Length: 345
Ligand SMILES: NC(=O)C1=CN([C@@H]2O[C@H](COP(=O)(O)OP(=O)(O)OC[C@H]3O[C@@H](n4cnc5c(N)ncnc54)[C@H](OP(=O)(O)O)[C@@H]3O)[C@@H](O)[C@H]2O)C=CC1
Ligand SMILES: CC(=O)N[C@@H](CCC(=O)OP(=O)(O)O)C(=O)O
Image (tube, rainbow, N blue to C red; front, side, top):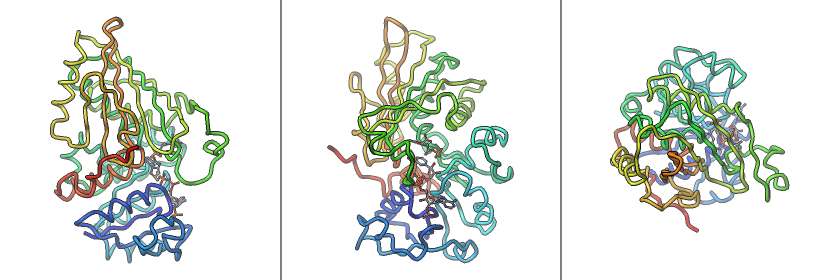
């Protein structure tokens, strides 16, 4: 299969390139860059020298459509929505790492992203690519909206509890922390070394664009309207997300019973590892890998269930999940090209 990546100089793209280089069934035909066409990838990313000998190219949709079967968009929001329709009309499948096709409602998109929504007919055909939950829909998709990084960790942590009706759906608190690579490669004061080193910041309280994305999928699963309290934080590490989720149990359960429930929910999903009792995951234990590790704790005194869900934001939170979705789309083993265990220490 032949593929291309758009947004070539970004972190999502270079992580995709790494996985595609190890993928037995895929050939990377083109890396498209709007800012650095004509430049060798290795001059932007020296760690790829002599390993990936490719020169980035400018985008020409009609000629690219003739040579590739699938395109990955690793562009910021507000870019893919104008380019994807032409690829789809040319019969090219698209996996979009940005948020442009994730929200079904144009009003929601416009109010949270503060820009015009994609054409509704394309939004309607987009499949939300949370791999473990929507495999059946992904298999037949033409356009996959790859989930955001916080929604991936949060939804994989919450959906088994929602589906088994053991928590109060109206009282969910998500306290999430991310490393700085979540902000992408472009320069910004917020992630400047001296602003971030030895610091820990909460941001976008009540207004992060991942709130409607999390609520949309939880509503699909719960079948009722619900809202969540979501507070993101940025911490001085490069990669990783930890979502600590607080919920109220509506039925008495032990930690062991809930772990058993989660383990059976994910028994056929090799990238979700539900930890045994007392073993709470940390971000370094998934670093560089496509795993989502989940830890469970029931506080018997307060009746609260705490769920800890960790991922690498650039892998399971972006490029790894995009490769997983490409595998599902093609009927390949879901782990193809993604088998590496986390880098540790
Ligand atoms: N970083 C993360 O942890 C995650 C990122 N995502 C999403 O994935 C996408 C890519 O993220 P990431 O790689 O981190 O971001 P980066 O900022 O690192 O890279 C995005 C790339 O897109 C290209 N680009 C920028 N502006 C434009 C434009 N106006 N038109 C066309 N291309 C443009 C640039 O590459 P070039 O100049 O070479 O074209 C840029 O390097 C984003 O939508 C992001 O929100 C999703 C989950 C997690
Ligand atoms: C640290 C930091 O800024 N993180 C980003 C992560 C979001 C992201 O990349 O998500 P999308 O794919 O939905 O754009 C943020 O909070 O906006």
